[in-house]
Image (cartoon, rainbow, N blue to C red; front, side, top):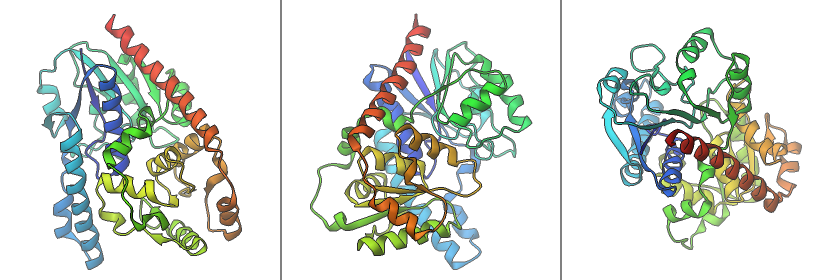
Length: 357
C-alpha cells in the first residue's frame, strides 16, 4: 500500500527539507512505496518576487540571497524527494482523486497556525488531511504546534479533524500536554532526522575532502534581531581562534551538512542544526530565543539526551566559557538517541502494520 506524507518540504529551510527526506527514506527502507504530497500553499510561492519589493538595499540583498538558497535547496528536492503532482490550494487537494493508502503528516510545525496560511488569510486545514475522504488511515508523526498555548480557533480545528487519526505523535512535550488538556492521547517521538543513521547523511555529502573547514565555527542563526546569538558566536570564535563558515546564507543542503560535519563548534538557535550537531558529535551552544513558544522543541531535545546545560538565554562570558570547557559523553548521548530511535520507529511501524491488517 502506498504511503503519502505531508509536511513543510517546500520551506527554504535546511531542517524542513531534511526531515521530509528522512521520514521518506525511513519508510522506503521498510519496504513501502512513499510519496510526499507536493502541497505548496500560494502564499509560499513568492521568494523571488519579494526582492522587487525590497524597501532597502540591505533587504534587497537579503531577498536575493534567499532566492539563491532556494534554487540550491530545490536541486536537492528534485534529486532526493519523491513528490506527487503539485498542489497550490486546499481546493485542489480536495478535487484530486487520491488512491487508497496511509496518510502521514509531519514532522515540523505543520500545526502552527502562524505558519500554515493558505493564501486566503485563514489557517489551512490541509495539514489535518481534510482532503482525504476515502477512508484511508491517517497518522501524525512528530507533528509540532510551535507554541505552548492553543488558541480557541485551533482547538476547534483539532476537535473537527484529529479524532479521525489512528495515531497522534508529536515532537515536543508541550504538545503532549496541550493535546491531553483537550482530551487527546498523543506520544512523544524523535524528529524524523533521527530515524536515519548518520551514515545516510554522510552519503549525501559524499567523500570527505581535505580542506580548511576544520578550523571553523558553524554559526546558524534563524530569525532577525538575534543580537545575543551573534554576540555569543563572535565571542566563541575569538576565544577558540576559529573562522566563520563563509556564505552561510546561500549554501545548498549538501554544503550545509558538510560544513556542519567539518566544523569545530556550532552556535545556533535552530532545532535541526542542533539535532545534527548532536548526531555528528559537534560541541555546541544552543541559544534560546527569549519569550518564544518555539524553545520547547530545543528543551525537549536537549533534555532527552541530558544536554540541557549547553543551552543559554543571554550573553554571559563566564557562562559561555563554562559551556566551552564542559565535555560531552558522546557514547552516552548515542545510547539515548538509539533508544529514542527504536521506540519512535516501533510506535510508527506498529501502527502502520495495525492499519494494514
